[in-house]
Length: 86
Image 1 (cartoon, one colour):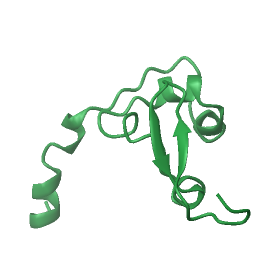
Image 2 (cartoon, rainbow, N blue to C red; image 1 turned 180 degrees about the vertical axis):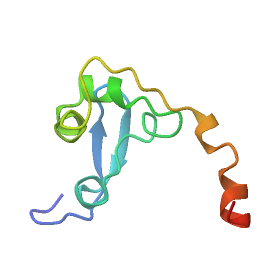
Image 3 (tube, one colour; image 1 turned 180 degrees about the horizontal axis):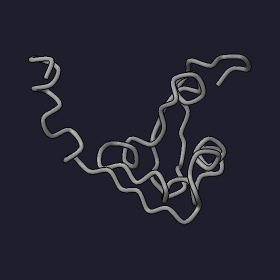
């Protein structure tokens, strides 16, 4: 990476040990992180326990003892809502 180049892909390793590539722009400005951890289902409480960067935005709005887990069922009926408006 050249100094000041925020678009070149870098190698990253998340708190769960997954390795992936992403540019600093994608991570810092786009809010994207590990593609193995953040697709549905979402387990943000566990992510916050291991990732201090994520924890700083999660814990002001959530208790540390919460156990929120969001699986694919949260999308049930969503497509119909968007197409019909109901």
